[in-house]
Length: 170
Image (cartoon, rainbow, N blue to C red):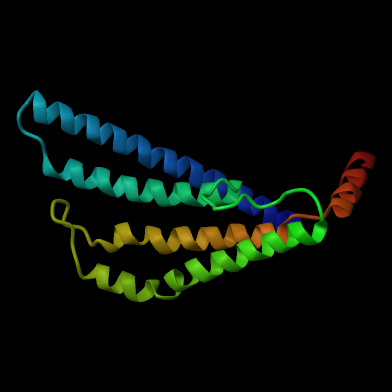
């Protein structure tokens, strides 16, 4: 079960990396297109700016999930990775508590947030803004899944050694 959870988190992370890269690539292409049409043709379509902004939102939030998984998200003090087992475990638990405390209310209230944005449409594209704002609860849910995988999915040192010993003997 732990291996399935950890592997699922890895595949989800890989998908988020690809999607974030795709959104940032699309944003770059849209901005270049807008600059070329604005300064060379003197007529920039308004939808490019709006679509580039939405690509930035999706790419940034998916990138935040990747940063959380890697442990490279911003923090005041880097958590300990070596040393006393109690100290390292305490830091992991504190990070989990802080993550749930800060992101839990966002996920809890996201249904009302999405319902409000479903009624609004974007200016240039005319689509419901919920298609853009759904990135927020989706990113929080992915971060919570990564957190669950980090707390439950990683086998301890003795379990990892036992599993690798079993894998080499087969």
